[in-house]
Structure formats: structure tokens, C-alpha cells
Length: 243
Image (cartoon, rainbow, N blue to C red; front, side):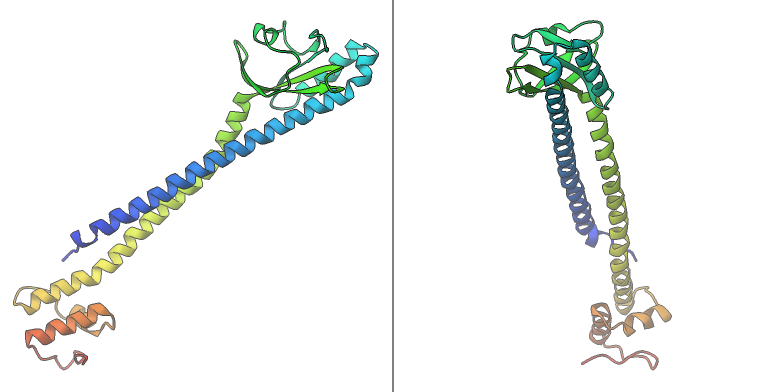
């Protein structure tokens, strides 16, 4: 005889608990990874912009623009860096990596600003642009744009791996909880069958009944109590009722 209704709420509670744990853990994981990786990329871009600004001081003083162009072309090869441009203190564009020319969205911006800004350039994509002043802004400004699509892809991969691991824990935990609930329900089913037998109905007999009466837990106590209340004397091969 199966015990189904008794553990319905227990199963539902276990499913709800595991679901809540997975959702909250996944949300926290997504937020943490997204925030940390975004800050890491922004910091790296700021460091690159500062490095270019420090390296270009002598080049700008000598007005060697060819060397300046060669310098920024090397940094564009770094993954995640999509474009770099340098402006003078008057807002003149001294060097850039745009091909074939500088987009209108960049031309319309403030060339002296060093605050992070999101840009959407048609035909190129979405970018986070950071800047670094050259000689406190007297020598101009270096602007570095990092590709948000590449950053987003890396974030998705990092998050996806963690979500997959959490999902595996969810499946294993749910299956384990079902097995444990069924393990607890099995002796209760045997106890119910034994109670039916004592009342005159059909129930478990033989070795199954002996195993039930021999249990030293609450199920065994209830089985011996049912037998005592029914007025049946224990068989020679059955354990005596506990006081």
C-alpha cells in the first residue's frame, strides 16, 4: 500500500526550497560575475589609456604623429580594445584607429572628457569608452573604446558555466530528496498494511510483518501498539511488545 498524500506537501516544499536556492544563487552569481568582469575590463582600459598617455608625452612634444599612430595601433591588438584616438588640448584629432574615418558619434562628443561613456556606433557595435588626460589635460586626451559585445560574451560564458553547475546540484538534490521521501514512506506503507491486517482486512504477512514488528524506531513501536490494541498475542516468532 502506497503512501502518497502524506508527503505531497513535503515534496512540494523540497522542490520549492531547491528552486529558491537555485534562483537566488544564480541571480547573485550573474550579478557578481557581471559586475566584477565589467569593472575589471574598465580598469584594464583605464590602465591602457594611462599607459598611452604617459608614453605619448615625448612624442607629442616632438610632434611625431607617425610614431604616435604606430603606438596606438599596437594597443588595438589587445582583445576587447576596439578603437583608440588621441585629441589635443584644442580638440584636434591627432591620431586614431578608425577606418575609414572618425564616426559622427565620436566627432559630436566632448574630446576633453575622461568620464566613462557608452557609445553605439552604427556598423561597429556598442562600446564603453574611457579616457586619460595627457599632462593633466594640457597635452590632450587619450580615449580607449572597449567592445561590449566581446565583454558580454565572456560574461555569458563565465555565468553559463556556473549556472550549469548549480543546475546539476538542483537535479541531484531533487532526485535525492525524492529517494529519501520514498525511503521514509515505505515503512509507513507497511505499517498501514499491517493495520489493515489487524482490522480483519488483507495486509502484509510473513517475513514483512516480522521485520515491521522487529523495528526499533517509531514505526516498530506503532506496529506493536496496534497489535496490542487489537488484542492479538504475539506469535512465538514475533518480538514481545515493549512496555
